[in-house]
Length: 441
Image (cartoon, rainbow, N blue to C red; front, side, top):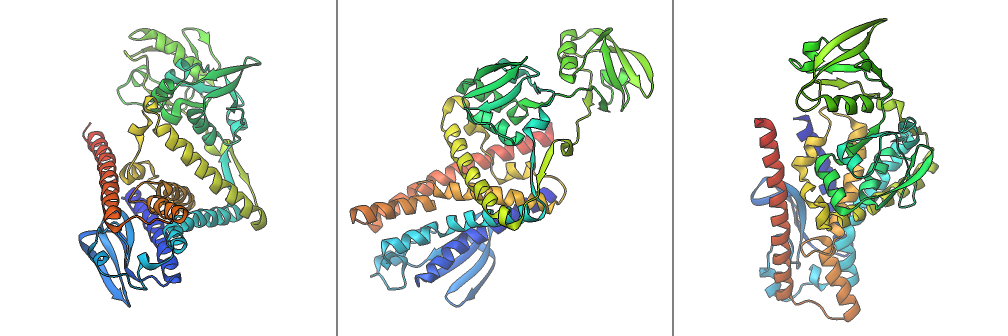
């Protein structure tokens, strides 16, 4: 329930402020605002109250929100008013440049919101990120797919497409969005070239988890009940030092060696406290024992740059711009069919499942800022039904001097809404199906 509460809070903040951007710019140019709704009121609303000329309300369907402007064909698909002569207070009677500002008002507010949140966060709790340099001091460990793509355990990533990334989380994303990865391997520089097919396999099977820190110790954090590790007598805190008498240094070496003993018996040299213990174990058919290795605390890798307010302002602008660029890159990746990235687009349901199950204001505000930039980018797309679609037609009108007829605008809006609703239905359906499957299996 905490995850649901978090996503509803984040969506509410973003939708209200996005629509307020349209509302305030409309009022600036004396356009009548008939409705201001958080969430969609398809059929009925949960709460509504008319104040002045505007009906304020909350819809029952948490799929965004809207402001209804007089004299505009929008999500409501109300075309009746378009049959009457234009009134001075209507959207359609305003100059093209004013209509363009109104259309971009929500996007502008989303960008300003992200900038403000980042500024406040950087000036109070600091600019935090996982250090690439710290996390790969011992090199990196790669999953099976990552190694198939050409990486090797122990590699240190120097740059992606010629650019070094000090933030590890961003660096893993850069790898999936880039083409040429330069790594340091045994003191030499090696290039790893990623194809779209290989990116697709990484995204579908391992995601950003395809790479991680190379643990220098194999320490049992927890044991799966009735597993081979449990039957062998492994306990939390045990340090595995050797396999069949052969010592190893890194946890990935242990995983690689044990995978070669599927359905086989092995011996483990385990340091328990101050004593060395010898244990016998039977590896399962998947080449696993059934224990979780102890992960290092993220604080061991975290960097926190303490910024003054003066430093936080430009840093927040830079971060907001960087996130916008990442949205563009991810969208381009989605449009490349061979990567199959489109299969992993998530609805608010899917996003909510990734949120922490405890209420953390620092995380929530950072996520709100990130999501705000994503919402700004999505609405900027020149798709009929989105702000970017309306803006595109207005810009064309400003250039050519020709305005799209109300009838044509109605057809375009209907077409755009069909596309958007279809995509939303597919995305929500996929996430709901996955949620049901995960609960049942």
